[in-house]
Length: 275
Image 1 (cartoon, rainbow, N blue to C red):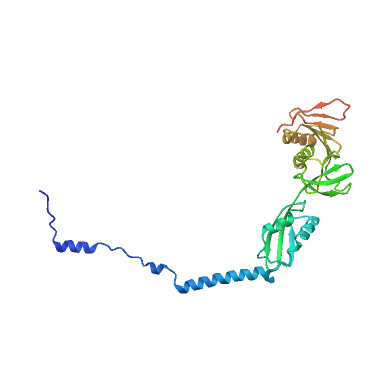
Image 2: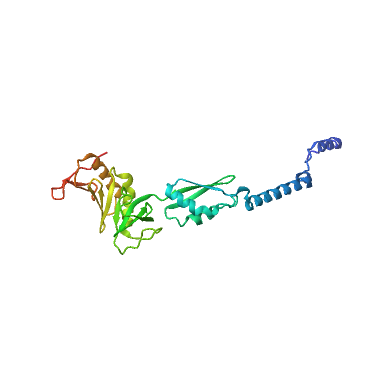
């Protein structure tokens, strides 16, 4: 037989009275008061008005443009291109506005800017890196490491840069990227040779698929076809440091380099430097 609950009604009421009650949340306390809303909207309106005043008036007008990170001649051209911004507000200036003015400068890759309040626009320039002088007949152009034609040159200008020659029928335009295949090959080789060889390159000779670097010392570094260029240049660099002067060094087959003191004398096969 089931047991009956022996607790008295009074004890049951007391136990029920001891159960915790849930606290009710008063949502009205979480809502902002009318005065808080008024203050918030007033501050927002003041901020918008201040922005409009700063943008449309001369309060932060550009009076000085500083160009940073470029050679003097490039800085001058950048400053001239950005001169129309003088008098405009720093507040409303956008990066796209600067890019539209700079895009036509062939010796500039890009710019970033900083607002130096109250009146200075500071522009940081990433210039093209001059790599070689392109020759076509009597004409000369400066070409960057990105194969971009930077500007025309007087004959004999920039004597420390390597020279390459292209046929007269090759089109060359300032601001364009070289489209001629052999010329682009010379750019790729020189970009690697700039940091890979211990000697300066005077010129690049392109004969069909073969590439030869002519150093200022007169030594020819024959690279052969365009493959394993980094390995070939590394082998050439080691041999140029270790061996006496010679007429040419052939590293077309990098694990079997060949050197000669003159084209008419017997060739000397040299061991690849181990290390």
